[in-house]
Amino acid sequence: MNKVSITIITKNEEKNIERCLKSIKWADEIVIIDTFSTDRTVEICRKFTDKVFQEVWLGYGLQKNLCASKASNRWILNIDADEVISPECAAEIQKLLFGQPKFSRYRFPRKNFIADRWVRYAGWYPDLIARLYDRERVSFSESMVHERLIPDEKAGILNQPIFHYSFDGMEDYIKRQNRYSSLYAEEKKRLDWTADWTHLYIRPVWAFMKNYFFRQGFREGFLGVFLALSMMFYTYLKYAKTRSIH
View 1 (cartoon, rainbow, N blue to C red):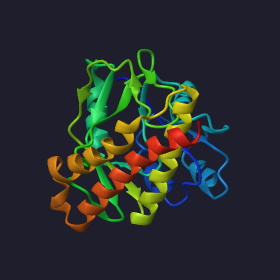
View 2 (cartoon, one colour):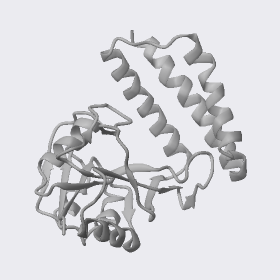
View 3 (tube, rainbow, N blue to C red):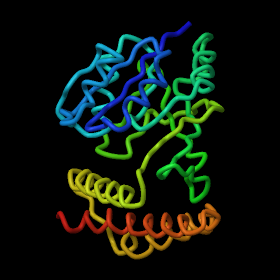
View 4 (cartoon, rainbow, N blue to C red):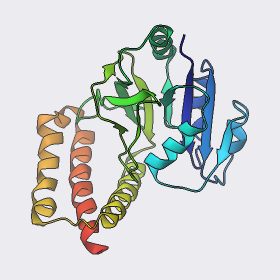
């Protein structure tokens, strides 16, 4: 059987991390890189694993690769501190690794929650995301935000979802979108790229239409309107910031 190391990057995740760690006690190894949390995150983590390291922030992609480099096993399951692996999902992972996995990376459906509400529409489910991978063949892109596993070759798909308790509510969602748009703009600045008029005036409108109509956000009621409008604003914001910082 292939052993698996679960990797997590943290900063001030006191409210989420214990729930996450309780769901992965079955793992062969848990490796955590913390970015100098000022709450009880590190204290809680050390109750579950002795592989807790503190490092300066490098960006999402680089930080996750650094975390994987400290793992003992070839197979890595990367999860976020606000995610939970159900017993059914854990069993499916273990069954897969008991044999010889066909692919170098595997994608999961993900159930995303705002507060206690599972968001089924507006592009929020199944939200397939690659998280289980062979680190000898795959690694994360060195992106500040929206990192992905590369090379982006064909992936296997598991059936059981990861549970993602992503946002406390609408205010938390808006704060996070503002931060992500700033990281996006900083990365584009490093690449000497800026947005043109189509990014500023066409793509935001398309983002609304795609999420509200084509991805059936309207089926979420008021929340669907909020999500489509906030995605439109986020799209505008990330491109507008690429112009403002040049």
